[in-house]
Length: 325
Image (cartoon, rainbow, N blue to C red):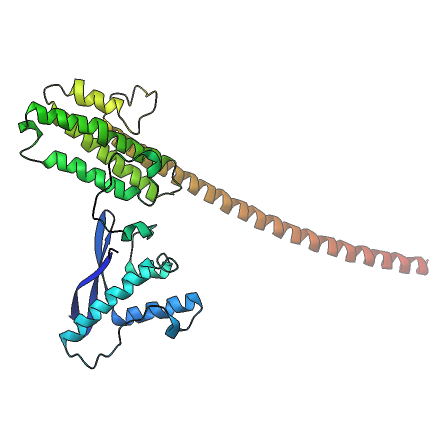
């Protein structure tokens, strides 16, 4: 199995050792620093969350005091054992996506561990993968393989412009038969996936960027006729275009379309925020009206009570007046 987590180094600050936890995720890697006491705190919290004693936690931390080692040897030994500890946790189906684990590792929002991440990467995905073979778990792996292939074609040799006609034709065929169909299948899979925002929006964005890279690659194959080759290719193969486009979008390439949609989304977000403020204001007015009505009802109740008291006094006064007469 592949380890996602390593601890390449440790540093000491004011006598306290911090372990540099390196986490390699799809499309990005990052490092976070943790003290040994924070590892212990994680075990206590996870044990409490599981409803078990700390001694029964399935993955043990290295001993706090390793008397048989001294100095840097202790840190090096502890680094190896902490790596085993963390990788064991993120492979455990019951623990890997526990919020406590994600908070400890400071993973991106909405990120989830899955078993496909731990499979050996001895070979890349076949880019001819059918739509039925793409799911939410392997989507990023297929995307990375496709992006790697596109980037390789863009940067190979001295550049496409210096290639001979045969190489250009081979690259065009690869785009039409492999890259573009794979990109379309990734898009269709994403459209039908159960992912929610912001992860789904993020994947749509990186697909649009990859489509733009494909357009640029095709443009570089025929710089003399960009309109008749890459532009038309971009229109016919546009991933996010509608079956019938409007006059405003039909002349745009994918990058321009992305910018336009981004601007529209910002405007819509602004309008939604304004609507939220209006609704919040209406709610405050409604609450004020409700409070005013309650106060008026209380005054009416008091008035009714006073009327009843006055009516009783009038009856008593009339009764006494009759006795005098």
